[in-house]
Length: 485
Image 1 (cartoon, rainbow, N blue to C red):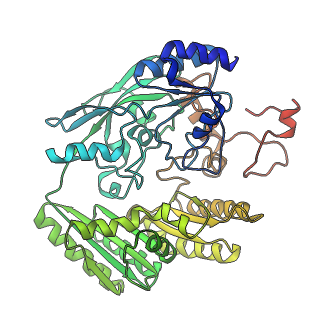
Image 2: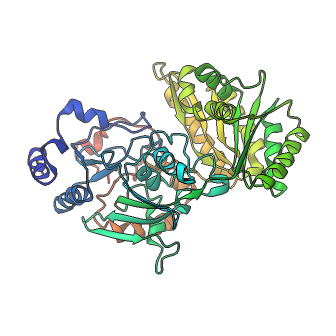
Image 3: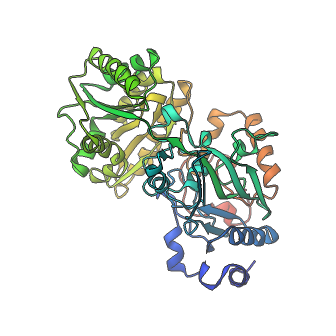
């Protein structure tokens, strides 16, 4: 369908200024947080209501046009990468907190609401929203739903899927349906569970009902410095093995600490090969008891320095270094890949040693900053795209790290999603039957495959074609000899 005709139809439905077709303006949306991959969409719809979203999707369904939903664009797996011939539906104007139901500990929000905005709004009433991705100051609740996002405190409180009880949802045919509600356990098939974490391949959430968590009576935060990641990993295993579940256990290695220091001057202990940030929350008496036990395990694992946050300002400084780490590596490397894989917690020391060996053998630096308590790794693979071959070597190291995660019984993603970036790794983790079953679920929602196509599932390759990054249209596809589907 001609783009100009489509734009005219959409403008009639959603308003003149809510449709973008100017090439320069479209480039604003050519990628999400994974800037390695860029695709300029055919046009953009700036939706302000559910009616706008449903109208845009209905029009796409009628013409068989692919569409992609996008929130703040902070995703790190290319999940919101546009389709060159499709419509990008941007939800960032839908940012109203529609209801705070304190009695039922629920809030109803539009998908563009910023994660931290919800906690800031409800904190004065004694509640907050527990899932806290590192990007919580800018990421949207709708994006969190799409990726089933986690965060530092998900060790104790669970991921997004544990905090969403209802959705208003536009299906790939443009129907508006409601899944779940304020009640915790709706009857029937768990369609809500299927949608959360489906990366936009089953439709578009336009309202989200979330669980609010009571603000804890007391919080204590500890920063422990170790000579090596082995020692820090041993402390993590000892803490969890003792039956202690802190609100958060975060680890940073020497290179990640260096980056954070350069960026935000967090004043972490000098000479540390690794630091742990451990936070305990809950009733005051429990916090004091558990905190003493955590401190003992850190000392027994040879922590050479332990600091305890004296007040909220010092606690904020501890977290400032950790939460700025992703952006901070930009100070020590012009380009980097934020990888996301999961391993069993007990495998931490071994896998970190193997990542260090990969780094040494390849000459590609890797900084590690991650949620150590639940084994959710975030290796930052550093490179310089301007140097021939460095980008490709970085991608090889990044992929080899995911292979390590699978070999140790883990997963290729913890909280960033599969997106465009890791679709090619799905066959390494799942059988053909597994992938076929997933496709059956998808087809039940989206039989025409127009909702965020090209994500999660691998695209069949031609004989002899190597997996990896490719640019432009394949010559055989361009000549009409082969079809990419």
